[in-house]
Image (cartoon, rainbow, N blue to C red; front, side, top):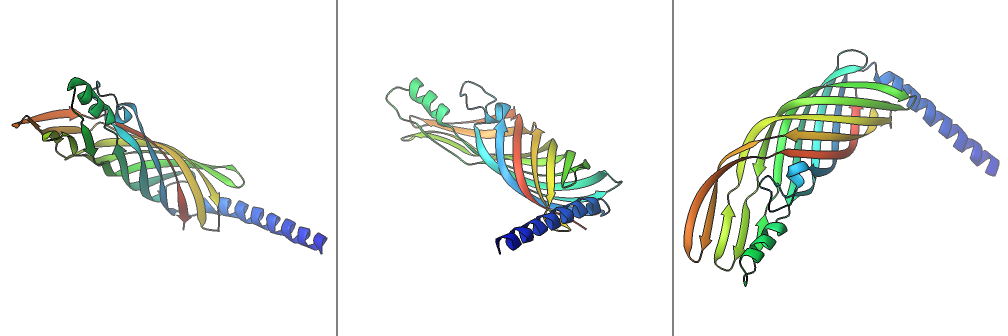
Length: 240
């Protein structure tokens, strides 16, 4: 009985390997594919900087990204893809609160802020090839437009406050990624990728209202935010 069980396991493994090999090879004869992936978003450079003395700091924290891709294969190893994505990163303003606490002894400042929200549409090319009999490696390069929303920021100490309004803008963006895909069924792959998304949106005329000792003052400011994130995501790829 034990020998029979081992034999069945071996036959199952051989069958799975053979199926995987067929899936990888046959996927290159199929023209269309769709992908759905999600994963963590790691802010990088000034976007993730939390230094209150740096005017370019974005105070962004670890977030998440979701994306959907539709692709068409132009030739055997090169395809064209369209991507839609949504990316969100929370914020950590504790360094700003600490700076105000130091500059105004006897007061305690608290901070509140929403997330950076980014969504966009990209167009690009993919180069993919079978790195082994059971594994496909892909390289993607995209460009397109994104809409970024800078979060509303509030710093308060009793009746005193600094409030910066939420603001949205549109800018050019780019993305590069490398991925690996392993066949699950004849037309379905498990896919994981590592990507780099970058843009420098310009936020114009952002209103800030300060209320100190009952005196209200309103100002506007304009800044360019260097936004870069690394993304590690995973999901499903379907070919047909």
